[in-house]
Image 1: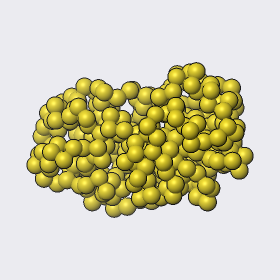
Image 2: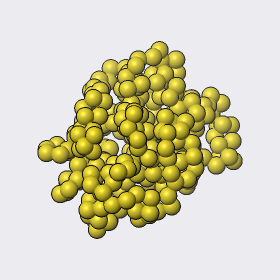
Image 3: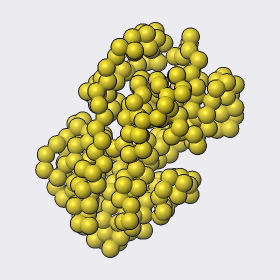
Image 4: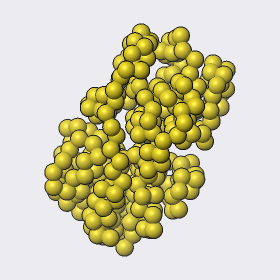
Length: 288
């Protein structure tokens, strides 16, 4: 009986779900899990993130071509419609779904991981790797990470967001070479995609449109400021309000500068270290 983890990644949605998937798979070290990625490039480099087995699949409905009826799966994607999800609940003997939506609900024959919901067969938490709770010296005063994707060049269109600032730039995985070169010219202090962990852990203040990066920087003792992208859903807004993370709307430079001016006295709430709770929930409901 196989165990799978399907994650939706891509050049229009970034790698937040992938990073979360790698955290969970590393947490379940010793358990034979195959990561299924909707991007073949990511499947090829998953080993660099501590994932031993990974396979690229072109569309979510092809999961049954790799798995067998009665297998088990952790599912992190918004691609599937209700009918497809119901089919998966019936196809897999254990079905654990990860959701970021505040208006979601747990359905019959599934287990749910959510930052908002609680109740029977639900694990209420945010997923952050243990390594981000290890405090490191903050050697970067101000950094900026738009995200791993920017297909429509939203950052270039809204450079005014950073007027008056000179942050270190963390580049994204999916940036085209010419776009990356342009950004390097615009931001002299820049860091490659491979330096992600160092930048996240060592930034005193991180301006980011990546919800996962914001949570990880906050866990490491940093002060994230979340930028709500116009091309991204607003699923994390209520969570960040709950954690008292400042949110910038519409790429407003004035709003960002105002936040930065008062950030020294701004109090963030704590990101809980929930690795053991998460590990136990998954192992129990995969019957391991």
